Image (cartoon, rainbow, N blue to C red; front, side, top):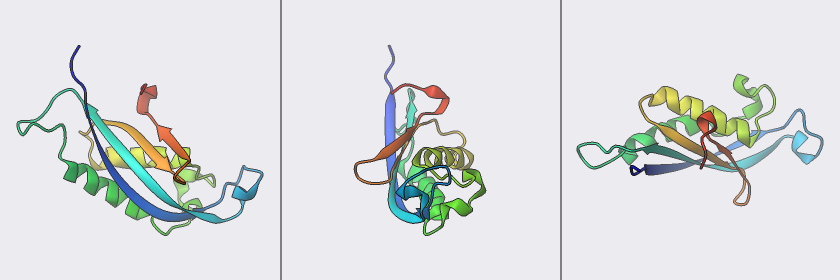
Length: 127
């Protein structure tokens, strides 16, 4: 069995949203201070002994989260009126793959609060 390496970067952003297909408080406009963690995974290291330079992962994640920062997420077409934490994680994954396509993104975590998070695992990968 070969070794697996994982690296993680973290960023945060503040945004507003409401959930159109929800019956409760969250159907009203409100905001969160989101925290995002993104993980890359692989089994090979480069000549420098790294899976991926943290700076590359962190820079791309910050660019993606800056696009969401201080926005009403309902105004972004991707969410179609329901910017749940699960869809935010999916959106961030998709944007990261476009920014750094050769990076094996393994997992995206989106925290709406310190206690509540959604996880996106591409291709149904298992943790």
